[in-house]
Image (cartoon, rainbow, N blue to C red; front, top):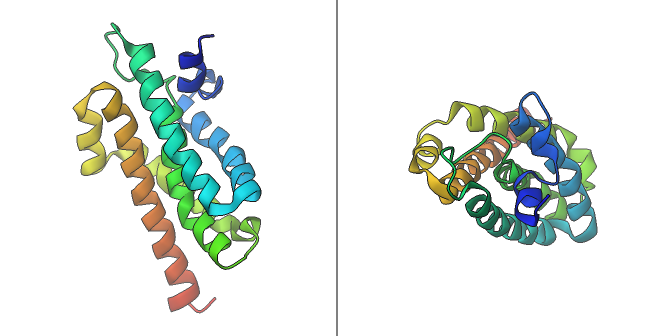
Length: 165
C-alpha cells in the first residue's frame, strides 16, 4: 500500500464494508481520544489541521487520472470532519479540566450528527461535495464536522442550561 493510499483509507479503515465512511468515522474516535489524552484540545486541533493537509494531498494522489473523484474508500475526509465535530467535546473538557470520557454523550452526539450531515449533505455541505476534486472531497466533511460540532454545543447547552441537568 502506498503512503497516499494508507492516508486516504486511514490505514485501511476505508476498505471495510459495508459503509466505509461510517467505519472511517468510527476509526477516528479512538485516535481522537488518544490525542486528547496526550495533549488536550490543542493537540487534537493541530492533528486535525495536519490530517486535513495530508488528506488533501493523499486524495490528489489516489484520484489522479481516475473517473471517480471521491471513491467511498477514501475516508481521511471523514476523520478530519469527525475530529472537528469532537472539538465541541474536547475544548470544554480541556478548558475546564473535565475528564473527556465523562462527556461521553457528546461523543455519541458528535458521531451521530456528523454521520447525519455527511450523508444528508445540507446546504454548504452539498455545495462543497459538488465542487469535485480533492478539495471538495475534504471540504464537505469539514463543513459537516462544523455543523455537527455546533449541534453538539447546542445540545449540551439545552441539556445543561435550559434543562438544568
